[in-house]
Length: 364
Image 1 (cartoon, helix red, strand yellow):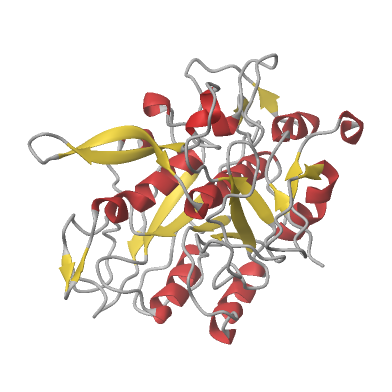
Image 2: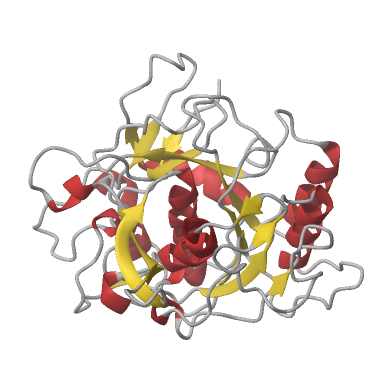
């Protein structure tokens, strides 16, 4: 029976034990990162990475998503060259190119219309990993370098494009596309909905990526208790479910004993007046002003497993910034050292959900 882990309570202490440095920062941090003041209360689901200074080793995280709006202030200084991996006929711009921006609002592909949330999704995901503090949007690792890879737009996504996007992000050669000069150590996949059993073509690519000790983190999907679908159900993938700010499994999260990690994904507002009762993740996004123009914003609107996944990707990158030799196998093996139970779900009797915490005896 697979063991589930809810990430990532107590990692500030873990990083200290492994050589990390805790520093105070002036901005107010989001609830999912914990409190800077050790005496202050943190949300039960907090990552507790607040104030953990990134290590000396740069870490590249590929965000394979709807594209990233490079001008957003929360991502200033954090973006590396990326690529649009959507090929014809799935690309309303005609084909692949270095332009990783998302489709325009209301862009049409037949009867499909791109929405505002769809357009900003990749930007919001990237901000949770590496946000620089703009209006309180702080990434788990503000020093992470983001390689944006556009995989979906107004049209449906092609499977060949998924395989090529993964390969390109990892620095593997892809026909007709320049080699990625900045291969990722972590690849974030904030989407789900493929085959119920991981296809051999996808597993083959993931196996090649695993040979390079690259972490692949994938959301389990907002399927309200269904089993895992691709890519989260593939071997070697760190599958991420969602908990609310009080560390209960979110009702929208997929439920499967193969889920490896749970992280804050938010949900409906909770009763009470604690800072985390808003129960949504603060992301860098865009809103429309009264003239209909897009303006950068910082908003408490992130809800879903697609927002839980980048918190795990951000944490892994933070850990790698201190310990670049760490492998995905190491990461999985070390998770049980810092775990505590989460309320189990009656819908999944085989699930044994765990959340992480730092025990003082584990430091010694």
